[in-house]
Image 1 (tube, rainbow, N blue to C red):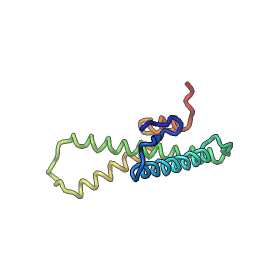
Image 2 (image 1 turned 90 degrees about the horizontal axis):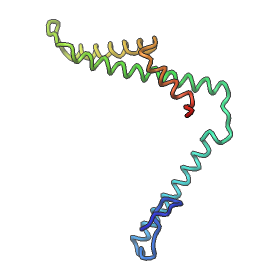
Image 3 (image 1 turned 90 degrees about the vertical axis):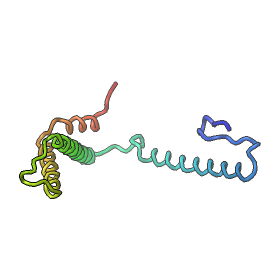
Image 4 (image 1 turned 120 degrees about the vertical axis):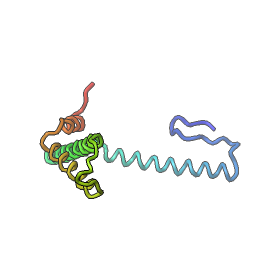
Length: 137
């Protein structure tokens, strides 16, 4: 079996006859059809289709990216708080049960959310800049 460099699909030789050969050729045709449909969808939705985003669309997209960046930083900060808290020795004076663990998890989540919205450690800004600007090299 050889790979056709144009389609990156196996090319069938005349020796692949019978049910197995027909099955393989049928699978190849279906795969090529799905690949062609995916490429057509990509061409229709890519930025090279001539559609120029309006200022409102750009502003909305950037707002969505900023919100997602802040949420991502909040999530990472929460994970950081949870991991740091694991290093604190357990104190059984006031009890240690599942309710306290749930409360502590909510507390860390809210603390991380507030910290991220207030500027955090700068990770959200970094993510936002990476997703909204083109890197010119």
